[in-house]
Image (cartoon, rainbow, N blue to C red; front, side, top):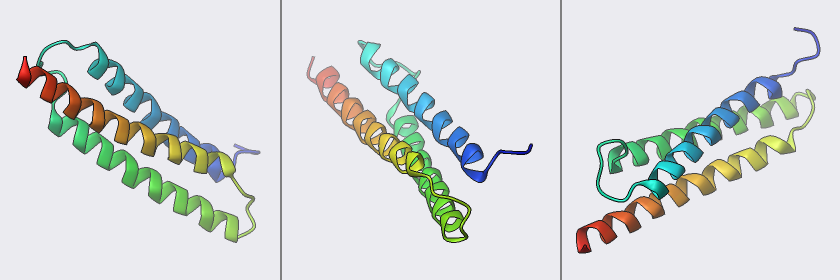
Length: 103
């Protein structure tokens, strides 16, 4: 595994969370009525876990940077994408919940 750094492994975690959050976003945008596929608990827990784990990975990346293992700006951008998608998912869910209740 020569040539791979810690950032390569951390990016896999970031990308996995981004893909899962995008799938949840698509499900939230497509569903027309209340379904058991995605509920408030699922959206909240997925958002919280993805933000916490991504934040820990970002801190590990900064620690590796302090040890002169190189810097990684891409991890910071990936964390911001995860943070934005998590907030966006929560916003979409509660907006759809209010729309479904009022209908």
